[in-house]
Each structure stands twice: as structure tokens, then as C-alpha cells.
Amino acid sequence: MTTPDMVADFPLVTRFAPSPTGLLHLGHALSAMLGWRLARAGGGRWLVRMEDIDTARCRPEHEAAILEDLAWLGLAPDGPVWRQSERAEAYGAALDKLRALGLIYACQCTRGDIAAAAAAPHGPEGPLYPGTCRSLGLVEGAWRIDAARAAAIAGPLFRHDRTGSTRGVDPLALGDFVVARRGLGTSYHLAVVVDDAAQGVSLVVRGEDLDEATHAQRLLQAVLGLPAPRYLHHPLLCGADGKRLAKRDASASLAALRAAGMTAEACRAQLDESLVAYGFRFS
Ligand code: GLU
Image (cartoon, rainbow, N blue to C red):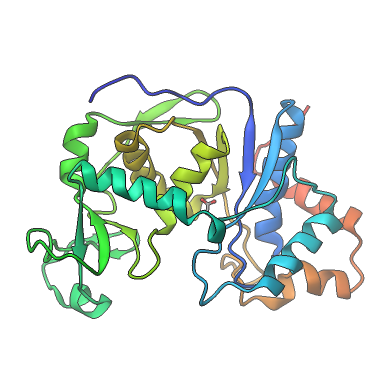
């Protein structure tokens, strides 16, 4: 299947894809602002997508608060807000395609089983799946991709960054990652590639904590025949303790900063300052 990548270069479409599991903090706002500024500077569009497949953790009130924070910052999406919870059909079709290609298998291992497999090599998201269920022919459970088989049919893979440089992808970086969680019909990686393609996203702007995910997502795009967006992974904002901001750092939430009297203008100025410090320039 070694065909040149269809790099989705034009038009410029970026997206902000929060999971509504809590309040937005300054780090999320930085990501949103960077995508928005790049879209504005390049005459493109900036979209918002709620990554709410995990119905146990996602809440409508978090979604409402995120949209309120974005509006407060003055970041209005250039199109309707998408919700992954409404896209099961599209994910099902992609999963069927992977199944028809013979690339997925059901797995009934628990996290504990995987952690206990002493020989399991580690990837960025923890121990790589040791392949226990790969040839058992199970028909239910979580669905995993057979990454080596997918890599063999995909051929050499590349990822393309915003500035035009290209580097190789390691299709085995996340091992046989999950493409459909038990009972959900999809996973983060599958939903993201299906939606990025369906929304015409040509530049994925997100934090560098998701850099490794790009390997898995490029593999999925290749076997599903989806275009390759460009990627920009920005540094993560850190708190006073030097650790990256997390949803539990309530004091860095936009809601808390607002309640403490910060104006939207001051918040935007602070975010712009961080972006400049990271080397971004907007004309
Ligand atoms: N939903 C993910 C998050 O909130 C972002 C995923 C992405 O940008 O691909 O961390």
C-alpha cells in the first residue's frame, strides 16, 4: 500500500478538541489560542470538537463551562461544535473497515493482566500490549489493532509538521493499541482520525504530551485511506511547581482566574506572551 501521503494542506483548518471532564485551564487555553491564531493568520478556520466518548467521565456542565470560557476569551469557532458522542455511526464504519482488512482482534485482558505480563515492553502510555489475545479469535471485548500487520500493509509512514518538515513514523510505538473500548465502539485514537478527516482538519494543534499518539494515528489514517494532516505539538504550560498543569490544578482554571478578577484581555495577553516565548510569531 506504499502510496505517497495525501497531505491535507489546504484549506487551513485547525481544531481544539477538549474532553469535557473538567474545567479548562491555562494550558488548554494556550492550545486553543495557538490554533485560533494560526487559523486567523493563515485565513483558515478554527473548529471546536468535544471529545466526549467517555460518557462516564464527560459531563454536559463541563462542556457548557468550556464553551463559556472560550467565548469569554473571544475564541468563536468557525462552524458548529461537534460532539463525538453523536458520531457512533462513523466510528462503527471505520471499525468495520479495519475488521474487513483483518486488522483487529478482540481482547479480554484487564489492565492488571497487561501489567502482570512481565516481559511486556513499555511504551509512552504504559506497558505495551503483549498480544495475549491476538490469535484467540475472541468475538467480544475491547478491539485492538494488529499493529505489525497494519504496518506491513501501510508501508513506510511519515508525519508532516506545520513548517513542511517530514519524519518517519514508528507504527509500533503504541503496540497493538485499542481501537474500540469495551462497550464504546471506538477509542480516542479511532475517533480522532475519523473526525479530523471528516472535519477537513489540515493542521492538528495540540500539546506535546500527545506527540506519541501521532504515530498510532498516522498508522490508522494510512490503513483507513484518510488524508494526513500536518501536526504541531506545542510545549505544555507548567505551574509554579514546575509540573505541567492538570485539570486538578483548580487555581489555574480559567473560571478561577476570572473569579479572581482577571480580564479576558489580560488572559489573552498572558497566553500570547507564552506563545511568543515558545517562538511563535503571528503576522
Ligand atoms: N481530547 C484530548 C485532550 O483533551 C485532545 C486530543 C487531541 O487534540 O487530539 O487532551
